[in-house]
Every structure is written in C-alpha cells, then in structure tokens.
Image (cartoon, rainbow, N blue to C red; front, side, top):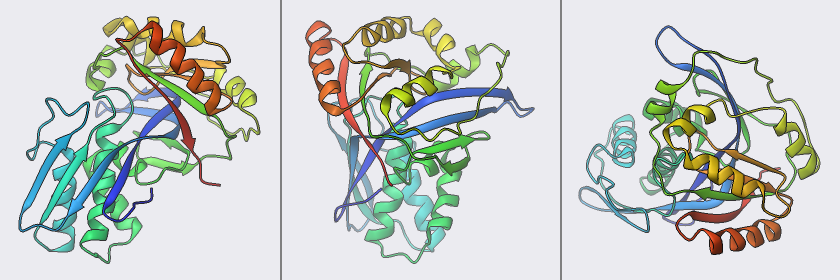
Length: 290
C-alpha cells in the first residue's frame, strides 16, 4: 500500500473464495482464502497536532464512532505505545466503502493509519514489527498492510503471497444491508466440506474464473439466511453480459462479478445501477503487484 504525502488509501479487500476448514476449541474458525484488493478505497489523512483526534466524512460516515472504540484510533494509540511516544495527530477518514459489508473496510482503515502515522512520526519501526502491531488489532489488519494478492490461512493470521494472477476487474454490489461477521459465523453450520488450497497460476481471467468456480465461499449460505437479498444480488450480477463468476465476498453482504477488463465491468455497473438504484454498485480494477 503506497501513500501520497499524508494521504493513504485503505483499499477494499475481496475474498475470491473463502473456505472454512474447521472450528478450534477456542471458538475461532480455520480459514483458507484467496484475497485481492480493489482500486476502490477509503482515504486516511494525517496531520501533526497537539492531541489525537479523528473526524469522518464521506457517503458512509453516518453512525461511525470517533472515539476509542474506532479501530483507527486504536491503531494510532498502539503505534504510539510501541514507539514510546504520545499519540498526537489529526486523523481524517473519508469513508466511501460500505460498513459491515465483507470488504474489510475497518481493517484497511486501521492498516492505512499505521502506515500513515509511521511516516508522519518518522518512526524507525520495520514492517515485521508493524505486522505484529496490526495482528493485535484484528486478523484482517495485517493482511491490509499491502495490496498484494494473498492466500490466507489459520484464523486469518497466516499470510503468503498468491501465485501470479491475470489482470481482471470486478463489479462490487451491496444491497444496502449491513451484515455482522460474528452473526454469520454463529449461524454457520458445523459441517466443513473439504478445502482445495489455491495452487494455480492463471494467465487469463477465464482460467481464473474456472478455477474459482471449483471453490466456494462457505459463509454464503449462512449470510443468505440472515440477508436474503444477497441471493438477489448474486443472481442479478451473474446475468450481466461478460460476467464470468458471481459470488459473495467475505461475510457479506457485498457480492462481486468477475470480468475480463474494467470496460466490461463498468458497462455492467451502468446497466445494474440503472435497474437497481437502491444498491451500491461500483466497478473496480484490481491492484496487482508483479
């Protein structure tokens, strides 16, 4: 993830597939997932200040807390403690990603905050230490420190770079419903189909879609029971021209359609947005580090 001065993008994280391999004695679930990052992003802006404050604006700012319950401020305070300094910064979050949407937005915001403040405070903290701090904030936070396509294992804390993926684009659609990750996992049936870890290196979007079709999002059935509109979204996206695969991301309710290129995804976005003005519909290129 690269920042521009004192502004840092917090990119949407998409699970192209998500297998739940089992449930540990402590209640956490073991996962196997392939993730990529969209060009769509919240923005973290940081400035020097005598104290620590957070302001939030943007289309999805309503209702978000600006106190210590917000993961952004928790990230700032965690970094300051590790550096042995007082947390002093004016932080602004521009929120364009829907909340509780299966896009890792809160985790990405926290990760961007760690990167932005490390730069602002000129801290000699290496990436490994930053990764450790991020892991204490939540399993998804260290994953969001980079925009590289990654394979996720364990309870979300095991991260390795994915084999090379082709260039492609996604259509992201949310029906305007927030879905609690905790509620989805609670509703999950304790039957765990065999996993098929990702090993493919695909050169074209068609081959990528074919490989993904042999996998699943194991959270989707539980999420559909909580938010039946997810099924409507997947059906509508799958019917769009040039869509190669339609699936839910993360714990929902955001779903994606996979397209060969951004032009096809943008055309599909225009068609779907005209038909469903009540849905959040965005086309996005996929961040790829070769």
